[in-house]
Length: 513
Ligand code: UN1
Image 1: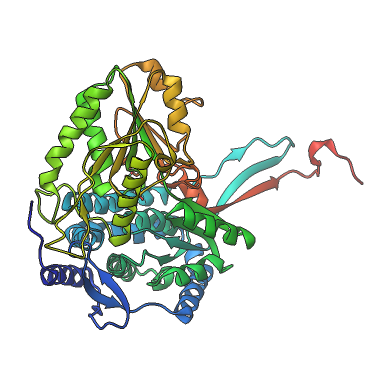
Image 2 (image 1 turned 45 degrees about the vertical axis):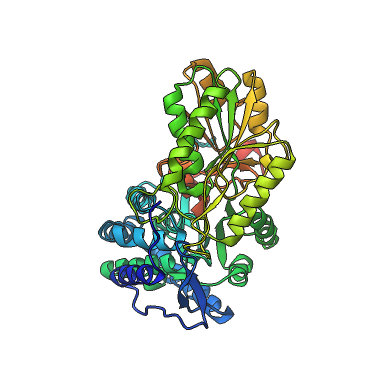
């Protein structure tokens, strides 16, 4: 098992990366601010100054003024220059940002770099979008009239992000919001303040390089109270929040109470169906990456394997065998040999241990994994062996999202039964089927198939590209971010009727005067 680096080593590495990204006032360890920790050793690296209510007020006020006085009137293709410059800086600092993500979120280096690549990709997409914010023209029912729609910027977008994708989800929202003419106030997870400072510094540099106003973006380091101020402020036209279903249930009614707009990306409980015709080599690889990758801490992580009983033994044996090979590759996420980094912290580990106990009480059999590793070397860090648990049925614990690497295995006889199990959970984010039978694949993608926002065939549930809209149904919250036409959530639509005739015919044939 790769040895862990010391906290001093991690501190030095992240310090240089932050400096290169242009974070001017490097935080120190003072014991007074908001602690920035690394899950690699579980120890504190710095204290970051936390925002108070006055800072939140100032940030929202400045972003709102910037929106009204400058940004909404800047032509969209010119707004695109800012995002293009940000994309260039992200390319230049890909390694630095990946280092910071690895330090704060514990992602293995390749996945951290992949996350930064996702930022670069969305910047490219948003730059193109800056010339494609199209409205439709419709045929008017009246002679000499034109009916059309225009898309306008919305206002301040409040972005709340989670620890597990500390930079990509910010970039999905921010790159698109900025070209749409919105300004952004960001409340990152309190577990990842350093990545937020680095992103903010890079965006500030991009703004200064292209002559865009610095108030297009503000970052607020803080906890729940800080987020609540953003949620309740009527100047925040759209609140885009990523996190747990519990968080969504708190946030949505508060935003609704002020008739604001919400874009929610909440939990997933993603499943893969493995049919008897599946290419098993491919299925096993897809399953293992989906379930154990990112130490099970993606909202798209594969949590339920619904496998046909004819291939259940073969598939389970192979997955367990692959997990056996992972065991030697749990540890330092900076080591190229590592495939499974740490859990984010103690509560994540507790949730995993409790879920495993509950699964056993509900009749489950742990086929492999679940043990904590490296606790002698780093008592405050939480490394675990990814677990596979055979369940007799889809019991309560299987229907919950536990943000840790536990894969529940269930079996089915008919595809109808598989779909019932598949859709029989509160969440609806991502799904996949492994099959070579076209009828099954089409049915799975049909209205009567998977009820998720992401429905894949012969690939796993995680690792979506930015070009499609990302998000899910039911308790996942219904929001869509990233590609396709997700930009529409960041703008307001005006319907225009223009009369270029000398008559005034009323619609629906109404006569008056
Ligand atoms: C998340 O886990 O919050 O599809 C986002 C994926 C990534 C994004 C995940 N592109 O797994």
